[in-house]
Amino acid sequence: MGADALIGTEHLDSATVHASCIALDGKALLIVGQSGSGKSELALQLMAFGADLVADDRVDLRLEGGQVMARTPQAIAGLIEARGIGLLRARHAGPVPLEYVVDLDEAETARLPEPREIRLLRQSFPLLRAAKAPHFAASLIQLLKMGRVETEWPNA
Image (cartoon, rainbow, N blue to C red):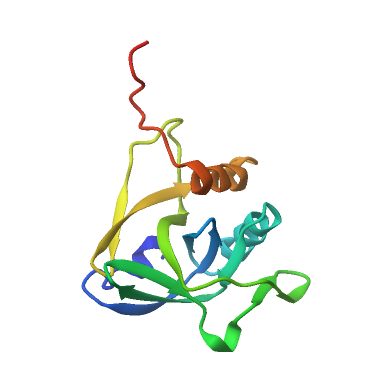
């Protein structure tokens, strides 16, 4: 499922997708994957590092002025599932411009992966695959804060 769940959204102006979404510094990160893949778990880890919840389980996306904005469906605003604990209340943000998409169904095996992208709502976004490493959530926080260096290093 993962990024495949976004197929068919590339020519739309709005969509509600099965995903989780967090925001940091005015940038949203959309987390996609099959049920049970860890979307809420990763969102909770990112929230522990200071991110705010946009939405858990369902995310409303809307093209506004050339930007895809992520927001919470009102019925689930400020709620996130913590498996084994239950529904938790959370500070929520939104609408927030979408910046990145993470696909938990695809594992990243490259140490320095080539950039990938995905199209949704007439826009292109960097697509990241899940890195099965303890630093993954911290790395995503740093990505949201400062961005990514291209894989070709400048000559010294």
